[in-house]
Amino acid sequence: MSEVFVEISGLKKSFGTLDVLKGIDVTVNRGDVVCIIGPSGSGKSTLLRCVNLLEEPNGGQIVVNGVELTDPDVDIDRARTKIGMVFQSFNLFSHLSVLNNLTVAQRKVLKRGEKEAQEVALRNLERVGLKEKANAMPAQLSGGQQQRVAIARALSMNPEVMLFDEPTSALDPELVGDVLGVMRQLADEGMTMLVVTHEMQFAREVADKVIFMDGGYIVEEGPAAEVIGNPQEERTKTFLRRVLDPTHHGPGDPE
Amino acid sequence: MAMSKRQRAKVFRGVQYGVLIVAALLMAVFADWGKIQHAFLDLDVAAKLFPNIIIVALKNTIIYSALGFAFGLALGLVLALMKLSSVGPYRWIATAYIEFFRGVPALLVFIAFAYGVPTAFQLRFDTYSTVMLALGIVAGAYMAETIRAGIQAVPKGQIEAARSLGMSAPRTMITVVIPQAFRIILPPLTNELIMLTKDSSLIYVIGLAASERELTQFGRQAMNEYRGMTPIVIAGFLYLIITLPLGYLSRHLERRTGGKKVSVV
Image (cartoon, rainbow over all chains, first blue to last red; front, top):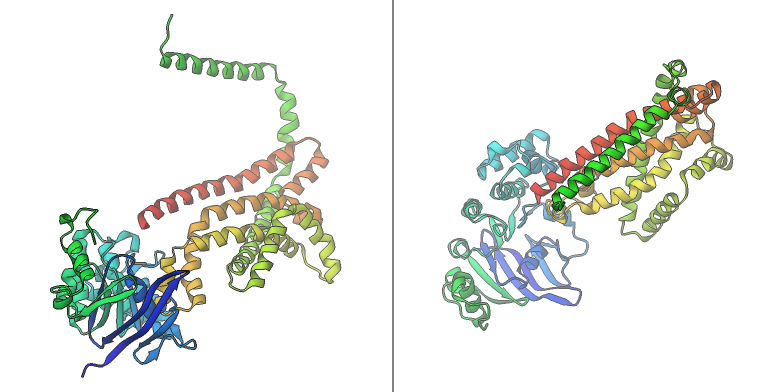
């Protein structure tokens, strides 16, 4: 009964002579949360950034909600309004207040009226617990607050899928929980999500599917309990050992 | 008598102050202050300059500078966007324009504009339009480079965020990049305005009617009339009345944006 919402097939991407993605196939069903894990340089962020064409693929096909994004004639701006994205470095518009960060694209892109845009914005700020910060400037907020505003900004466009690119990696440890809490709530509400993350606990508890990437390939994928709890591939095991138990490995340990 | 390093430095500094005081005293005693004042700041002459040096000359200097700045800013923005364009010919034109007008003296451009352009193209401008175009054409070349640098200094993540919200490339430029670029380049732009205010003195070459004179031309005219440097000195002080606050503003903005950058990044 589950309907395929994102379909990636044979995706290739290279930067100059460096092949970052060497043929990736991923399907995401509507309402599913898919977490992508893997060592740095494995291509997981590039994969995510290809899903809204922030990176232009060199080969393969990406279909989101029936729209083929890799079609050269696609209206990418329109497609992107349905694909929310949250960045590692928040990327709030630093010259706009929190409220205007949430309304600017609604008004300029979706052509919503001022009043409607503000209502939508305030509703989404409430969802992330920051309604009282509507008139603050981004620089006045903590990292965790900025990231929650960034999530609210993406949600204000009423996206059908949300992409998270290491959303907690730039945060102080005690602020990570707030952001993950918002993401978990979003998952519970049935949002389709693709999440690049190092938060294994989150992946274990929230993800419907976990993908482990290394060297531009998908090495292993499946339910969280299997990929994280009982990995089959040697590379997955090594990576998880290092991430879950970093103090027990010297720098020179063999792969 | 052995002196420590600190004591030697103290004595050395004392000697320097002493020399300065002696020089000042010598000047005060031996200079013919009456003559100097008569040449540079004759109060009777100064009194005759007012109020016209304010209500005509200072006013015109401000108007010319503002017009030139406004036109230069608009032109500079267009040139900066051309220079960053993916369309080759736009880039080449912008580069050629910038290199040319930064490389030749502003005075030559003004002369060409005053005597060449009207005959060549059968155009007649009033003085204010001529000044605006002449000053702006040169200033635009300088500002284009400043604006381009500002646009490139806007973090890439801002553009990615805007595009991921569905904004088109031009929309992103207008809504996100340019407003932030101008915050970054406000201090250097203020400096451009100071330069422009001083360069406005060069427009005397286009020939100005009495009511159109700006500070320098007004001063030169008054100098012929009254003999002595006084009008030029007063004009100089009036330039400072414009440029010093601008300089202060520029430094203030620099401090503010400098501090802000740290907190944002």
